[in-house]
Length: 462
Image 1 (tube, rainbow, N blue to C red):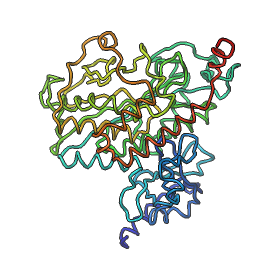
Image 2 (image 1 turned 30 degrees about the vertical axis):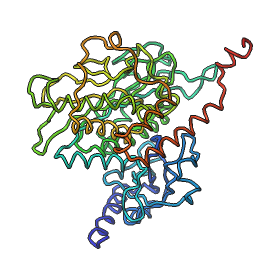
Image 3 (image 1 turned 135 degrees about the vertical axis):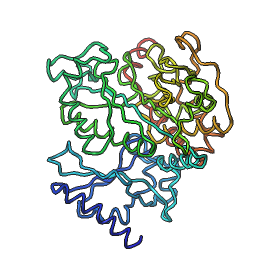
Image 4 (image 1 turned 180 degrees about the vertical axis):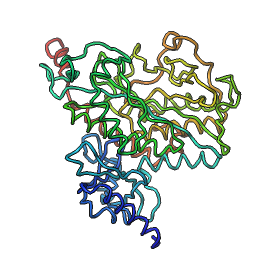
């Protein structure tokens, strides 16, 4: 690192600490395969060294299952010596953590590299970065936004030790109704939402809208569109941490489980994508006022629909993910598309042609944002390069017209992913091997558990 760069690094660290004199510790964060934040907490005095030299974490960070156990079948554990890699600071992610302990903490997002500075193949952020380079080579820039659905739940469980909606901070009552877009419920949770917005502003997160979603205790947080797709996912990862932290501060828990309640709507992560060329023109709007007749848009949709069945393991990464795919709850059940239609998997929203975009509606809230966007963009790239024509767009209720086709089997989803050549080439065969080994090991763990329902159904009757 040059002396000039070294000086710049020291300035970033010292300027931040000068601006936040109460901060004594910095959390160094990295997102694992599941999107779970891992990392280290350091004294603030060491911040300059982190910017200059990075920190060391074992490659097995990307071999951890949801419980934090190393999955040796990935090849990243003891069989390879469980060696370290270097993690580098992501510019623009150093910010205060305003919801914790008298503003004593800051946080900084990291990404993993090999010791020679090349990208580490199993870091999902590095996979997304490589796919973005393919668009750059074509003179295209994705403009993206993510929408995150989540539930607030009471920290106290009900009489059966199950989760329940929180008590309203105003009325003290537990919600039992859907109340989609309810302003009254936004008013009841106004202090929580105000703290979300203040904390997001302090962290430089472009939080746009918070709305009441369609189940008791369910909300949605939307991030503003950006032409920096890596930052969009960084923001998503940090927003999840922020929402969970602010919820705890207010006496709730926030969960991004895809299906926390069996009979209520699941939580998804919707991705909005458009593509602009080197002149800043949206190529999905090339046919003017005809919203679906752009050849670029059609080819992008064609790629998304073709690869969607085989990408389900990436979009629905765990056991609970697949419980979300039930009919009648606004969850896509087949690879379909249409204009201004919320019953399809790929929606082209209404609006001015300059904002023409694709909304991908399949993934759960539990998805790793980097892997989600990498999968979506890899599918779009495939559609553009191969000029794949989509099926006819759906008009009306897609659930009545197209039978369910997307698998709700975790095992089958992993099998389909393992055999898809395009996704293997785009995401990296070595990464696919690690991902599948990690997910298969976690599935094996779930098969060792016997649920209360199974005892109720089978103990006396078979």
